[in-house]
Length: 189
Image 1 (cartoon, rainbow, N blue to C red):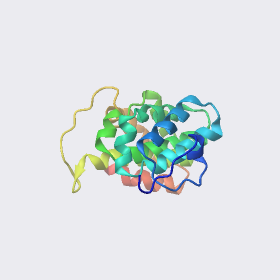
Image 2 (tube, rainbow, N blue to C red; image 1 turned 60 degrees about the vertical axis):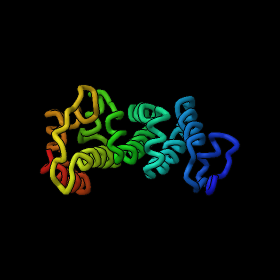
Image 3 (spheres, rainbow, N blue to C red; image 1 turned 90 degrees about the horizontal axis):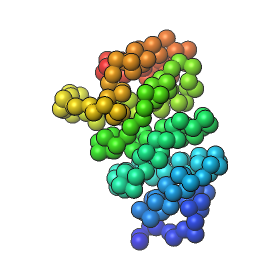
């Protein structure tokens, strides 16, 4: 295919020198690698590559169809902060697609990412995820439809009272960048 290079292995796709947009077969290898390895360096590199490729709308749909959203979502619970950050970045890119938002499910532990003690990089990414989901519901600044949130969906979780309280509490966060982001979100909740 035009602009695509064949790869020898899934790990080749994460070496940082792979600048082309990945095709479906390569994305499938990357997702398999992400699901099958415990090596934090490989997981982080795979999430970076996946996140970069999820910036393209065609890949957002392919990743969803390959079952990649829960694979990426599971990495949010990883103990390594850098892996959490990269997983959130990939989910942020995937969440720009409305169909993907329906597939993104995290349990109530996801709300713990909105706690003030969470690393700044993580907070900024979960706040961006909230913004992305809110923005997709609106057309020209107005609510496009009155959405129905199924229990267990990310919509349901992010538009619940507990999440609103956690976001509002971040107004007093010690970091100026986090505060600024929260102040742009509060009018929307």
